[in-house]
Image (cartoon, rainbow, N blue to C red):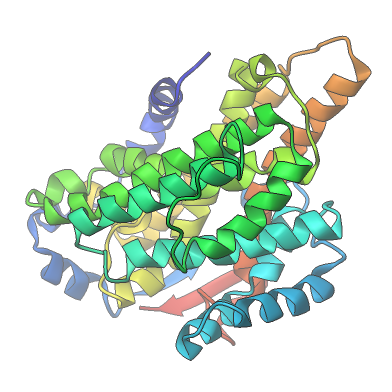
Length: 382
């Protein structure tokens, strides 16, 4: 079985030619301070190209239960999110639409649970991304232990049967989702979900320490280090692994660990992370943040933001190509049922990647309410 490091190594080799294309170089840019880099970037006008064209032939659907789920999600949110500002932010993000784009074929109950999950993980991640733990490594490790304890209690070998650990107000809503995941998935599938969530939590909770220790700006902004960090801390992995619950997929671990399915899984995650960065980098630079693939590429290669956008799009194309090549070498079990479940899982991986892109265009989170546009091309001022 290929591990994540091997898959990333293969991917970096594949894209090395893309990143060595000739361009106008300003060698001084990589030596600038963060403040000077932000000044360099702010005021730029950029074009977000038609991102749908990066995934030709893929489907961009929305679950038919979206309106019903949105209503139920808003009621659920009122039951535990007290801060009005946070409520408005979450309503603007429209997690019912996000889950509807990710899982277009899900039945209403499973779809609702995924809307709950993605709203919950948004709140959970905010504690580390822009909340009280952003630069507090010690606090983040306490937060990690509390989260891991709850994950083990709800999704472990004997869910909800161990002595109940202390569960705070952020983790309590997750328990409702976990109950449905336990009821609707096999023990092996539940173990996969737990493993993926643990990896995500570990990576996300390490970020405050990395922020505290960032002394070498150039090293932090290298593409390879950035991509490895994103693979550890990005949230796409759990969203894809939850397909096992959503569509009640029962595949042996041996099949899930097959090289082709591992490649499809990791390349789908990569497409999600890259597209997220492409659509969000303008907002992040406005918020004085540079940990995004677009400014990372601009700094490392001394190119304009527009050129960096094109290179990030090249990375998406390369990831899509790797995924589609793996799709032509799927394991054949000889069992109609198992082969059908493999196909369902692969389609689900592609749906999450395509759905993330589609959701980004359907709400105002990144592009605003009425951006200047030409079809699916978006013009933005930083």
